[in-house]
Length: 171
Length: 171
DNA sequence: AAATAGTTATTGATTGATTAATAATTAATT
DNA sequence: AATTAATTATTAATCAATCAATAACTATTT
Image 1 (cartoon, protein in one colour):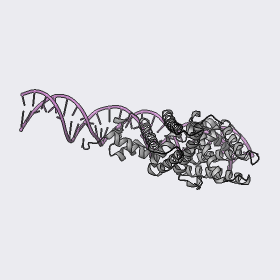
Image 2 (tube, protein in one colour):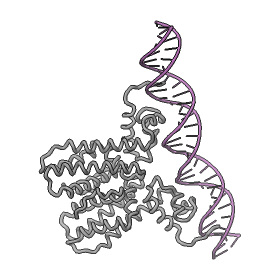
Image 3 (cartoon, chains in turn brown, purple, red, green):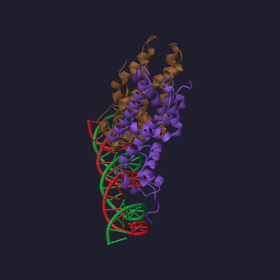
């Protein structure tokens, strides 16, 4: 049977892709897996995304969008900004674990176009954070951003590996 | 012709594997690539390592060994220990880039046994560092170790993506 | 309102390339 | 002759991507 559903198929595929890629990684995910999750046939994926790589990059971009949106939602005074942003990021790893996992996966995949997309996403995070720290009047902002990113990366890995002991439990 | 070479084949394969995996990643590396680099035929790899995964894990373990050895070679007074270790790690990324790349790759691969090996390697780094910080009488050692690891992870990613701007240039 | 024409949504079948791993075989060394 | 070192030949599986076909809907004409 044809034409059963109505909704936005491209959107379905993108969300399915984000989830499956985040769980199984780039190479272990087949287009058939994604299709199944999206409730369509495997070849139909290619009507909306020219290649598996293109679909992955679209999912990765969306993951970075959501991460940045999380930071944008943090409202805070200068005093507490850094701590609030760290808090927000930690919350993200329980609230949107797939976005974090996809970030880790995107960074380490060796396909060139994917690495470019990952660099781009990290650059966006960095420049948004720097802007924010600056307009909050934080001194030594560049250095603080680096420390913030570093903590974020360790947080990612600790979450991705399901290895909480990697981070000390003092707060 | 058979038996042309003499040396330790297992060792050759392991070093070839470490290098090729570090450059192309786990999934994009074929056993044929490694064999070629080691100067042997593809199936002969399996005389020394039962599976591709087993070979990767052996290479990853060796990479972690070398990283830890680098830290062991740092001799320093309590005062300068942390800075000296950071310096040593930064040097590592130019001196032994493959070991760093393999670490990044090992962490993000979704094969379970490989993730276990990566966790194990990180745990070894953490516990060695903690011991060292403690016996140097550094106060708040747990927290300092976390900061040290975080910085290391960002360093890894910045190197792996060839993206130095991710880290601020102040020292 | 019936028939016709055209479009959109979707699938089944297939393929061509890749590749880890095994088996059979050959050559050199002791 | 037996052991060791290595190769060639082969296989079985996997998967992204293409293609041709079909079902269902919409618009147009009669």
